[in-house]
Length: 117
Image 1 (cartoon, rainbow, N blue to C red):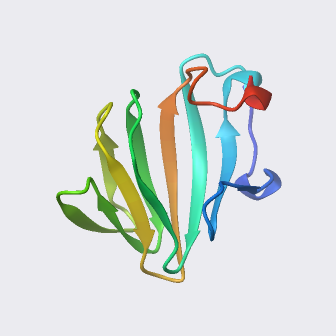
Image 2: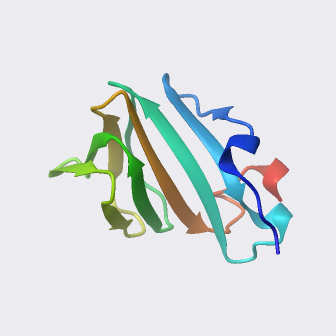
Image 3: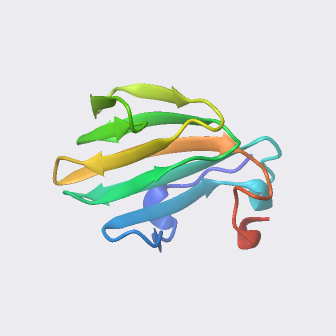
């Protein structure tokens, strides 16, 4: 078993302005099936529409934002959860001071940075 606190995990840049990630659970900790990430988007920052061949499970912890697949937009807020199927386009935009969410993905080599293995 591993127990941690998210504030003890280093915040890393994502390459998108105003967006950080904390890798909470990943293979190097022993997770063989899933990785858990904590994203923070500052107001008006965004992760552009993109897609992968793996699914995402997301739980909104704080704030409000827009989730889009390029055809439809969903206004989401703390307490909402969503499922993004494999290969579905998806993008995020923060509407509040911070938009914070957990995102779980399968533990696949192409989805997780080498230093997390």
